[in-house]
Each structure stands twice: as C-alpha cells, then as structure tokens.
Image 1: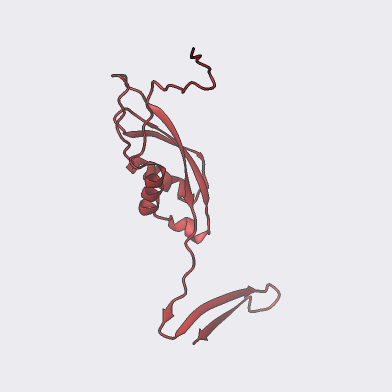
Image 2 (image 1 turned 90 degrees about the vertical axis):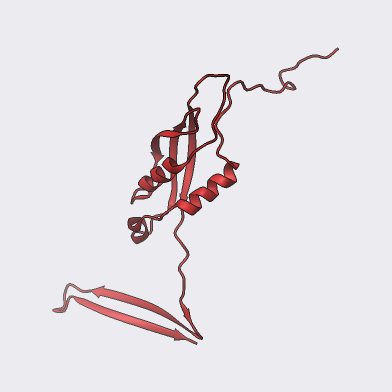
Length: 149
C-alpha cells in the first residue's frame, strides 16, 4: 500500500510564475548588453548592487518598478530603465489574470582601466595637485609622463 507523505510528495504549484525567456543566464546577458554606466557614477567611482522590485502581469509586461536599496549617482535610474525594457514570457493560469512581484539585483562594476598601447611604447599620464595655504602661491601642480618601451 502506497502512503502519501508530505516529505515525499511533490509540491504542486497551481499558479505559474513569469519567467524571463532563457532564464537567469539570459537575464544577466540582457542586463550586461543594455547597461549604460552613468557618467556621474564613473566620476565618483561608485559601484555596487541595486536591489529592485517590480510586477509582471500575465502578458509579460513589467510595471510598478521600485528601488528597494540603491547606490545613487544615476545607477538607480539606470536600473529602472533596464527593467522597463524587459518583456517576460506570457503566463496562462487557467484564465486568471495574475500579477507577480519579482525581486532582482543589478550589479554596477566599474570597468577595468585600460592602458593604451601605441606600438612598442606605453604612455601613462599621472598628475598631482598640491594645495598649500601658507604660501603665496596656493596651488602647485605636477605632471608626470612615464614612457615604457
């Protein structure tokens, strides 16, 4: 005789949740292809995770986007822009119209600095500004150019 135990029985889900076409991997790829790093965040060297929550209706349309934890400097607005571009797969729930809340995180990571290689020599520019209040000339500026090659 077969006994249904709550530990061994499969959990049935009567309501289907919307899925991004292609799953999590496609979601991350979409974000990385469409993300435009905000200029203000680049200047201030801001990076981190933005936590966002939004609703997806039975047609796969995104609405009611809200930032739960942001990092500022334009990254929150860019997250809202990215999420609003998304379209999920439509869900059929036996004729019922269901809105689902989805939480996500968008990572803002500063791009790696690049060194321009022009032929055989590499040029790195570095400048330092020094301020002294006591002297008559309050600002001194130094500029260094390092040529490697």
